[in-house]
Amino acid sequence: MKAPGVLRYDNRSIAADYARAAFGAVVCLAPPVFMDVAAVLAWVLVAVGALFVAFGLRTLLRHLTTYELSQDGMRATGPLGATVSWNGLTAINLAYFQTRPRRKIIARSPGGWMELTLREGPQAIKIDSSLEGFDDVVGEAARVARERGLTLNSVTLANLAAMGFAQTSGDGEEVLS
Amino acid sequence: MIAFTIHRLIIMVPTLIGISLITFIIIQLPPGDFLSTMIAECEAQGESGCMEQIGIYRQEFGLDRPMWQQYVIWVADLVQGDMGISFEYNKPVAEVIGESLWLTIIVSGATIIFTWVVSFPIGVYSATHQYSWGDHGLTFLGFLGLATPNFLLALVLLFLGNVWFGTSIGGLMDPVYIDQPWTWGKFLSILEHLWIPVVVIGTSGTAGMIRRLRANLLDELHRQYVVTAKAKGLHPARVLVRYPLRMALNPFIADIGNLLPQVISGAVIVSVVLSLPTTGPILLRALQTQDMYLAGSFLMCLALLTVLGVLVSDLLLAVLDPRIRLGSSGSR
Image 1 (cartoon, rainbow over the protein chains, first blue to last red):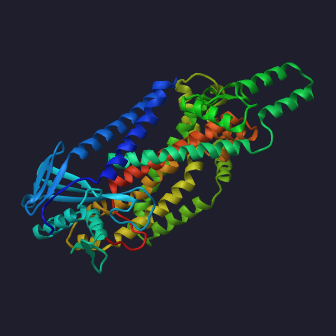
Image 2: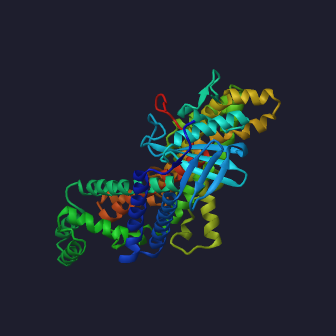
């Protein structure tokens, strides 16, 4: 494992998320504010616009949060603060969100992104692949899961295999490597 | 999940702009327009009054302006929820579609329920009893359903419904209830007539869904983990429901993208054959007569529902199975 360090979301991805939130909020909220829009349509646009505003706030919280990966665990400092220790790790979940049709996808390709959730009881840290050092966190979580004999769901195993942290056995099932 | 939803919503914006552009161009492509037809009819009848009406239309809807300006006006109105005026019916588009939209939703909703209720148990049975007599019989019925043209099935069922049950030919209700306000009797009459279009429209979809569900479930049932679970003594029903069935639901969810536009397009040919007062025949007529606002708004509604359907199915798939699917080989 690399030396402990402070991890942040890279500025480009944060800026892109701010831009998405602003664009969506303007497109959805401008018509009901400046135009004479039918009532039903106005409500729909306001609801979707609120979603974009919520996304903007969530991006702000991520912007202000830093993560620290160490031999003891993972700690988030800031508005989304939480601590998960490797000794107390109870579950890991690795999901992939695909934004384009099937293609050759890796964690940081523009076709989608990975999202890792680490749980220790009620405490949870959720990060995605635009976080610097994401691969190191996943690798460490996979190592701890193997050592602690955690049961991982098939989706997580398949995604870990795609990142090289699990292997596909002869019978087509994935196992941690 | 919110980030995924936002990404998908943002993709919808250029998609819808592109679709609106293509829709507008397609509607404008045929030579002339609805007003040209009106002028020809006026000249043939020697009337002078309607020429003034045509002039008003031309000015009001900007039909004398360049095409790009017409497009901008049309889109700006659509964004405000104004779908324009139907030239043929001389009424707002929303009013023209009116009740027929509700009847279409009833027919399509019943069809979707029919498709899922019938195909799901049959698909599961066929997969879990592969190559049994039941599987062969149901597969044969499925192929029959896929191969039979809908309009032919519609004619046969119309005849049988009339001979066996005395159901009036065509329409979605007895003639006495047409254009009448909603009553219990009208509702029962609709229910009495509903089964024919539901069976006709739903048959091919049901057959296709059975085939896909059977194939998907068979793929899962032959996986090693299912064999292991059975070897460990897990009850077969529990083994089936726990994971393979969940994975086999994917085609149902992916199909939502196609279902939503069907809800308002209303199987045009079947609707014409069965004389259903649904939106399908109205769309067909609007395209034939170049009633541009009616046809354009209708096509945009279909496009919007398709895009929304794909959005919903993508979100559900992301919740159910957020697994990476590699095009070839994955690497770090």
